[in-house]
Every structure is written in structure tokens, then in C-alpha cells.
Length: 154
Image 1: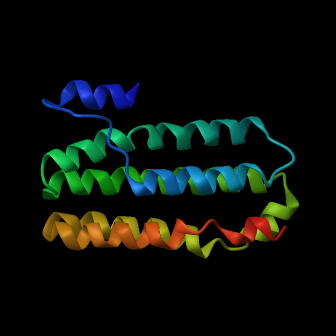
Image 2: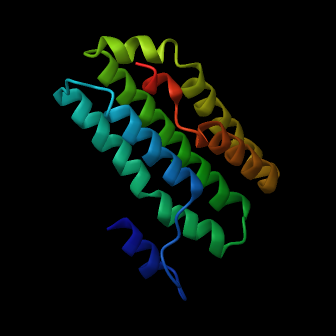
């Protein structure tokens, strides 16, 4: 539904735009979900929360592209990525509450917390120097490009 909104709102939209971060989230979400043996209602809500924020990525990606990496669209892009990161963190905690192996694998989840912090930094930097903010977003995506091996070890 949201990708369709992106095309309807923009004049001259030539397709749906998706970001590399979008696929990175999907890939890691897939690995996270496959590590658990028990799902609770809270985990389902956490999953919906993550999917909601990820559904906004194509819209904001299109907006950034149409405005040639202007400061405000890029900061909004960072906000959506930050909220996706926060939702992923919430989902992981909900799943870990009932799955001991996942709880051990996540540990203190420094990588997840660092991602959220970098996204917040990227939002502020994007307003001052858009391409520097974008570089921060790329750095976070590179951190997560290789699926999290903590899940596969368990």
C-alpha cells in the first residue's frame, strides 16, 4: 500500500524505489525469526511495528531521490531508518524474553544499539551536511550487510 502511495504522490514516478537498508532489514529479520521456537502476542505486535516502519522506506526513498538528497528528505529518511532500528530492537527483545538461545545470542546487542545511535547522529548531520549524513546511513547498512552470525551459531 505505501509503495503505491509513493508513486501516486510523486509526479513522474517511474517505479518503486527501494533502499539497500530495506533489504538488509528483511534479511536480518528472516534470520531473527528463524531462530525462535516460541512466539508470543507481544512478539507479533513487535513484528507488525517493524513491518510498518519498513513499509515507509520506499516512500521516503523516492522522496529523497526526487529531491536530489536535500537535507529535509534525507533527515526524514534517517528518521524512518531509526524507527525501523528501534522496532527491530523491540522485536528482538520480545522474542528473546521467551527464547533462551536467542537471549544468549543477542547478549547486550551492542550492534543494535550502535545502529540506533548512528541513525540519530545521521539525522542531525543530514540537516547540516546531507551527504555526510547519508554516509552514516551507508555505514550502518554495511555493518548489517552480512547477516548477524550470532543467530546462526545457536
